[in-house]
Length: 454
Image (tube, rainbow, N blue to C red; front, side, top):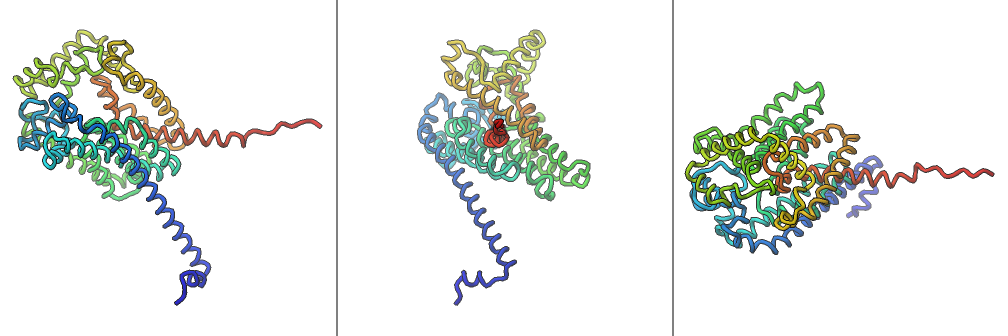
């Protein structure tokens, strides 16, 4: 029997080239798969270390507030068979205060590992961390195809070590990590496949966008950004894609429809995704504005507010807050505008106040302000550089940065609220860093040696 080497040597020259090319492609694919697994594994391992240090404290917090707060309280009701209800510690009846995806996930964990148990705390934070780790993989795969391997690798490793991504997955139990993963997947799919692929791909994007919306309804404002990107790529040849666009919208609507129907039947009013906007609007504009996110106006932390919430019911309470906050804004429009501008500044710099009393309660703001401000400057630099290479991708990022924060400018602007768009921030920062490094490396080539006269 001939050896494989002898067989290969006996092949015709053109066939040898094709075999070598296929072998090289297989080797590259294996290397990329290995790097992908390394990225996800490193991100998960790093976050799991913090999970092990923090999970025991979640069940010890007052009324389990650190255990997901409204998400956890609603999950508790689901796990105990009381339906989607009671978004605060007391039993208060049906609710649409929070979106359904994260409470449903926590409820499943509660049913298997116990309601508010330490085992549930560990599993919940570990799953949260897995979502964050997978986001590194999404960035690596999606950006490699669109912006090249260097940017993909830089963005993925930056996400592995990114302080916000680590903290809001391994320490903070909310929808941040899940929403970031789903929205990153939507953007990568839109950038890489929507302009070329079949109706089934567009439909898959619609379903994924629906799941992201069920995790955090605020991301729905970015759906037109991604569809607009696909339209931009097609130029004047958009008409043949009308059926694909329709497929994406139908699947998006179909994914959201059960929740919307449930809200109409249960809350007896047309609630699209959640009904808590006016409560948050009131809290952000009628509370103590010396704090960026005043909690004392919430039923969860104010007994008087809780009594009103129980007495009026959820929909009645939100209608009452609607009236109160509009009355206040009509009387003090300048104060509302000033506070909204301050929230916009906080969203992108982390700054609210440097008073001793404020920093005593918000100690993490001191290191966060320079970090967040520098990050915003790097985001601006990266977006400008990206615009020079890929105008459509850069404009979609800019639109996301402009549109997504708008509801938070008029309510609350804590760092956790910006987490869904952090993968985009990391992507443009990584591209800017790769571009700058390449420029610095190429600079000596443009320097001409001095000509010395003889």
